[in-house]
Image (cartoon, rainbow, N blue to C red):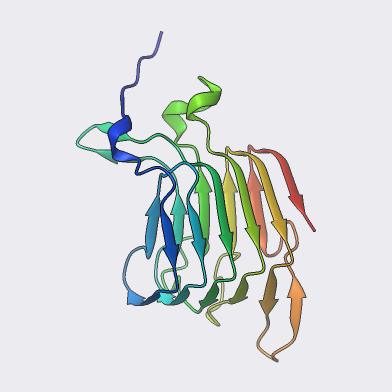
Length: 172
């Protein structure tokens, strides 16, 4: 039997991250592992790994967590970024491989992503704006992607949203 320990005191439940500017960062804008977090009204420009990562994180061989649940990401703007073409997108939602489905308590779940605007990097091979891996109950609603001509379209599974090993992902 595999045993994992989580430092549950590292979660900061119900965090509110609102009306901030994150720009020209070589790593992430926000790493959120907070149950009940609200991330809204922020501007992310040229964040090179992920603008927002929802996941527990590995620190000195142990995971700090728990994985985020009941998080809302809304009314944010994402411009450029991911110059490294690492494939993770501007919003990255994941349950780390070592804790897949061991319990519902640890699974990244119940995430709402709505009314965000993505203007992806123009580099060839840039990843989709949203990457969802091993998560459940993810709802995307009224998000828009701006293409190089300025045309806005909704998020679409496969082209602007990559979903792997996840259940109940809904895009409206």
